[in-house]
Image (cartoon, rainbow, N blue to C red; front, side):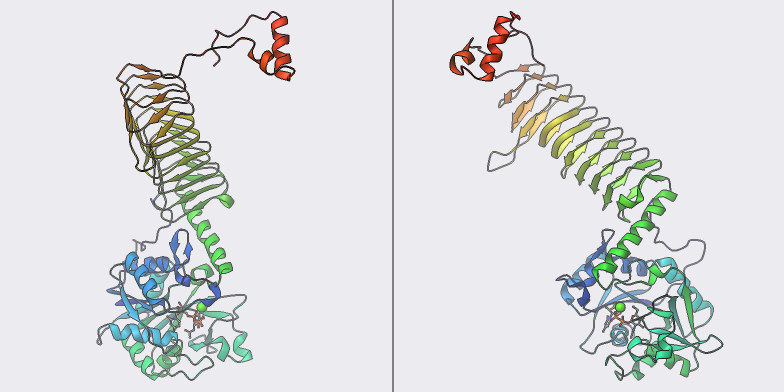
Length: 498
Ligand code: UD1
Ligand code: CA
């Protein structure tokens, strides 16, 4: 299941609009960014990506996006996200009215039915709210239905002007409004459902004769009223769904609210989130049931966490699959798979292509890359495994390293099943180790090791008695050595030090 359900409400039949037009031509200068505003991301998806998904959820016959600022970059991004979207170019005449007019010109001249207009920079808008707008519009037989909200601070927005009986008369832009009109707290979200013909006819009448010298889409409402059409509003109490991000402060606020909604949906579907304040999840992440997320967890992209897994504290996983019942602690992971009941961490770096088998382990201070680790195999401490394959139930000792790079090319290390490697073994790839083989501590494996063999290549140890007293006389080490000799403690030269 996906934590944020953008799909239409199944209980009510979908009323398909003829077209949805997503306005995305504006510059967004207040972002102070080289990147077009609508390409800035919330929850791992660009703002226009959110807008396209909400619009596509209405299943319109045509989905058009109007572009102008950074045209090629924005168009390419839209086409990548929604290849069926129709890209429409706005000319140099400014204004939301002109933008919609450009879109209508690209659609069939006899287009009938409902045309929905939304913005590319309103990322929390859902298909469900758009659908409510379209449903009211259709069922009430409106000429225009505008989505509005009542805000404490309405400054900057177009205001909804109603008659004394509450009928929507029109919209007045903040810059064109009288002092009395500026007192109105019901604002225009900029999201509407129009009757196609009413829209087309009204746009022909609209001029740029206003405070901003723009063709205002908002003027369509007054004109529709004058023409005898029914103009109405759907007032939402969820102000976040109509809020746009104009600068990075608003982007962060919308991002936090988006995250809060994703977390709440995840919790309601059976994910325990111990500390929502430090947990960030993209809306693309999916979960099984009874997953536990500990503080400081960030899950991105196509990450999936299967049932009963525990992730955190302090993990950042991007496009990682976490198997059922697995435990992942203080891990930074990318494009990797963690098997059922496997454990990873703490302080582990999973680079792309890591595949850890069922009940496997990648322990503390390990870096892995492009490695397939079989069921039950353990890489418990301090090492690097890259461009390698490890069979089942092998134990890779502390500090083992696959030396995969010869300075020019990368080579593979193939290790079999039930292998036991000594601490600080280095595998100089390309090299193969057979099933059940052992290596001694500090071995540098340059040649293949046959199944069942013990590979040793560290020179035999030689102790030069009294070397410290002779060559480092007077040092604290020499004094300690003297003291040890005089206390007749038996030498431990032969004993193992593990
Ligand atoms: C617009 C509305 C205002 C409403 C507000 C809500 C008009 C005249 N005013 O004002 O009533 O309260 O949105 O946020 O419509 N765009 C184009 N081409 C253009 C101009 C804008 O595609 O020539 C797009 C922008 O990229 C943006 C959207 O339309 O996505 C709104 O443009 P913006 O300039 O932010 O409109 P406002 O002046 O804020
Ligand atoms: Ca705006």
